[in-house]
Image (cartoon, rainbow, N blue to C red; front, side, top):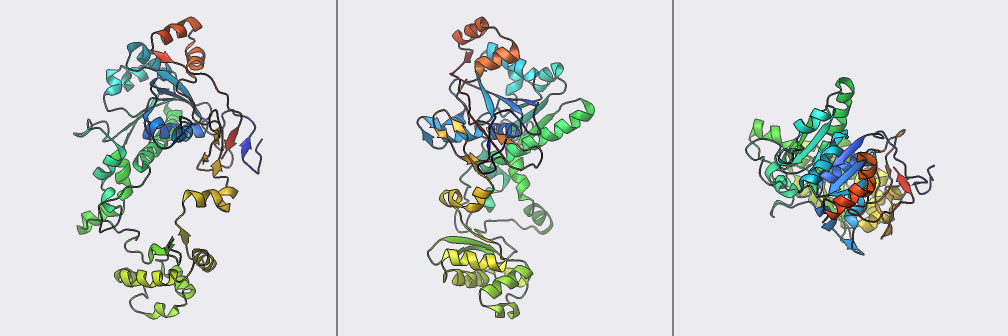
Length: 422
């Protein structure tokens, strides 16, 4: 039952359109875990396999009480099993889990699964409907396939870094693992499409999701411009070239607001709210093409106006005039914002060490079969015993033997008390 005030779900049972789908996650760091987290949010039963020392994502970002705050979110809704894949006994256990799965997600260097006896040919021989999502830096083949892939490095290779940042400075980066997220999203999209196709044919397939290709796909407007015109896109700062005014401007107190008014109808409204209707008759600014040809002068006029007013007044005037604009939000702004609160975009599932821990809610929203945050990221090996017993039928004696041989690792259990729906 959903409490409309806080979005809390009284139970932690899986729900959503992927309920009944079994996923095994062999990936690490960001792209693989994010891909699996998307599926878990919408009801898939995700079993994450990690080494005893834990996924590297647990050491990224901030930590409180020895607990990864990043891990609390990106590892949410998953059952966590610790198996040493460096040992043949560990790989045998992983293979058995994969043979029972609908989807397997991995982001090792191409060829690693094959060396471990976990390649698609081996797994699909037992499970022909298996869908294998393979995330790598440069793809499963090609001359660069064996290069180590890292999101920000593949951004550089994709060309997207060249167009990111200010023109008078070196290329900038977004302060999150953006390319890893894009690639994980493509991987999850590919997996769900493959499941639809499997419903018709009964056959699985391999999804080859490369970091550089995911980033390159976002270069869409610049690719034909080079091929047709020889134009090499470069950094434009906060501007959107060819669509003016569409940039960052400064308020009276020195904060920044982004205003987008490149289309003719919106620019007419901006000129009115600025108290400068004469701009509409000025040949430098009268049309979208003219404004783009005179973008420095146009932006200077808008910035002169924004600097004369405090942020709250700018927001009030622009919103009233129907001009798309927003201050540059920080996390303090987000936590205080009424729209985030009304849309229940911040949720706080219970964590054994942190108590209620804030994270972004599930997106996209589905009206009939919504996803849910059922629990925060669990400890390394927290579900090892339960998964090996329930899914593989191992006896307590077998589990003890594997533990003593350090093939597996298990940690104490923690039962979440509530789930939060999208």
